[in-house]
Each structure stands twice: as C-alpha cells, then as structure tokens.
Length: 185
Image (cartoon, rainbow, N blue to C red; front, side, top):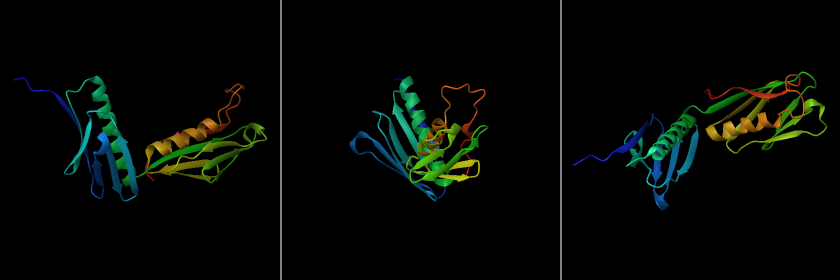
C-alpha cells in the first residue's frame, strides 16, 4: 500500500510566547501573545490546517499540490513574523532628502504630513496604518510596531507620498526614502 504524501511546516515557539489556534468556521484563527503585545490573524484556505503541538506550530496539508505548498510556506512565514513581532518588534528607518526646498514633516493623529515638498503650497499626506508608530527626529523618520505588515505599509505610504511626478528624477531627488528594513526596536 503506497504512503500518501503530506506536507508539514514547523515553527518553533520561543520562551515567553503563547500561540493559540481556534478552528471555528473552517478558518485557523491564530493568536500570538508575547512580551511586546498580541497579534491575531485568520488563515482561511480550505484543507490547510494550523495546529499547536507542544512548543511547535504546525502548518499541515494532506495530498499537497504546488499551490498548497506555497500556501503552507506563506502561512508558516506569517506565523514566524508574528512571533518575531511580539518578541523583538519591527522597525523601518526612512531618511528625508531635499536639495531645492526644505521639507518639514510631522505626525498629526493617524496621518503623516509632509509640508513644502518641492515648494508646493498644500501639504502631502500619508496614512499611518493602525499598529504602527511614527516618530520624526530631524531628517530621520522611524516607523515601529509589532505588526510587520502595518509597519511596512506605513513606511511605503510615506515613501509613495513624496514620489516625484512630471519632473526629471535625476535632477529632483527630493523625497523620503526607506533606508533600513526590519531590525530590532
């Protein structure tokens, strides 16, 4: 009798972190708690199961095809990022660069406001995603938090808000650029 193939990705759970999975409504509602906070995510793909077995999170699929292998690997990567977020946190560094007009940047609530970009009268704005914290010190902008997606999306929003359009980008290199991704807080 042939042995049926199966696929299992395992993610180690470090000390001080708890992972719980609820399988209600055919979804793997995963909650990761650690010293820096709590993250939760719903993994909804038919047949892919996330389980906690002792100190290991297992992402499992019976009779996997290429698509299922990719989904299992993605789920395992998301869980690894959640565990790292609640233990170490995520931090992106951005740099304000200008040659023509001095850029003034500040945080107003859940919006990042960029004033005097290329001498424009009206400020440009970038959304700060919930779960990310932005701070400005001189020409350095720091985006930090425990949710990697929120931190990365906020940094991308800030970078895209200062995109130069309609001018030669070799001459007009003004903007706010991501200089470092990841890192510990």
